Length: 136
Image 1 (cartoon, rainbow, N blue to C red):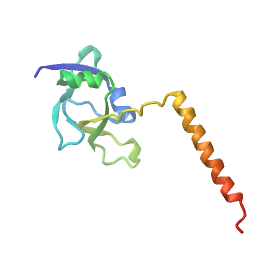
Image 2 (cartoon, rainbow, N blue to C red):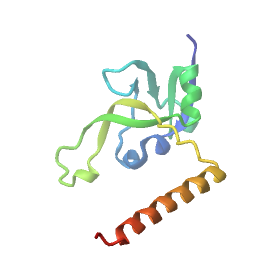
Image 3 (cartoon, one colour):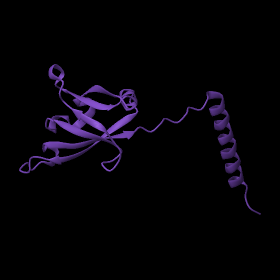
Image 4 (cartoon, helix red, strand yellow):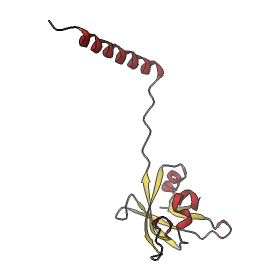
């Protein structure tokens, strides 16, 4: 099993939490939840590119991560207990969780979509005709 580090912008990974997150030394990366599979770790040891996370993961996972096959979720704790506004409290990352992205529904060809629409229109027309016939 070979490991290939991949660097991704902190803002891309953290999203709305970017401005609230403290610097990290090394944080574990799990699949789906903290009890899930340990994939590797992430750090910020990039020197010149200090505003990026460097993921140390298996090469296959790195390829999927760079292709956008995962979304991020986080296990964190608040560091400032004195802050009253919950939306502005500083956080410390305990773990980063990778969640598999859901696939897209396969698009229906136009010819098939128009046939389905025509069939639905016929069934709706038949339904309105049966409602308009007075009962004897």
